[in-house]
Amino acid sequence: MAIEDLGVVLAHGAWADGSSWARVITALDAEGIKAVAAPLPLTSLADDVAALNRALERVEGDIVLTGHAYAGAVIAEAPSPRVKALVYVAALAPDEGETVAEMFYRSPPHPFAPKLAPDASGLIWLPESAFASAFAQCARTQDLAVLAAVQRPISPACITVPVGRPRWKDVPSWFLVAEDDRMIAPGTQRFMAARMQATVRSHPVDHTPLVSAPASVADIIKDAIHRVTLD
Image 1: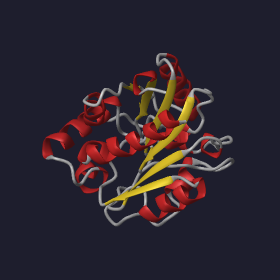
Image 2: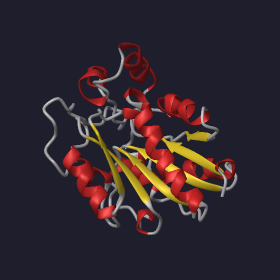
Image 3: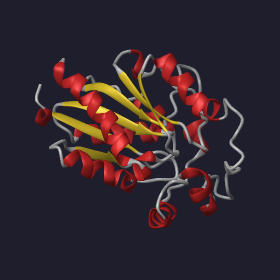
Image 4: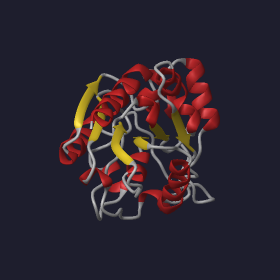
């Protein structure tokens, strides 16, 4: 299989939108790899899976599916047989019957991690100060301003529903462990990656390396692409 016959679909996590993948998209594009960012509404896990499936339908050929943070649970629910590999970027990977929240809180929170709770509308927002202290502490000031400005709140319905059989049981997976992550404990990431039997790449990056260290993210996606194109 040639690279031009393969598509990459990127799914953003909570408190983000597709623009968070901008630098990864341009890094892949520079090497002739087309990527599409799936817009997730973050209103429920089922809604997000449906939105991801609509994005997959727009892409021709086989797919390397990549998820950041919460979206790790979303990409694992994608049923398309065209998905040939999964890439987890500091992502959550609950097993069948587990919830995203269970994995997120598996380890004690980092001292700089924000306290999270639904607002009067039942949605969970990230405090603006948390972007610099925990979400993307390695990012540039201008990037932090954009992240805070475009954030999407997440509904508890996304993180409290037990997931089904995850696709990582059936297709090869890669996992970028963010060793300086202050949102999802690195130990939890290593636990999930080992359980998945994923190919692991570990980097001293924050929770949002797609913004602060996009080359590392592009590299692990290219690793997965190389495997798929060889098969």
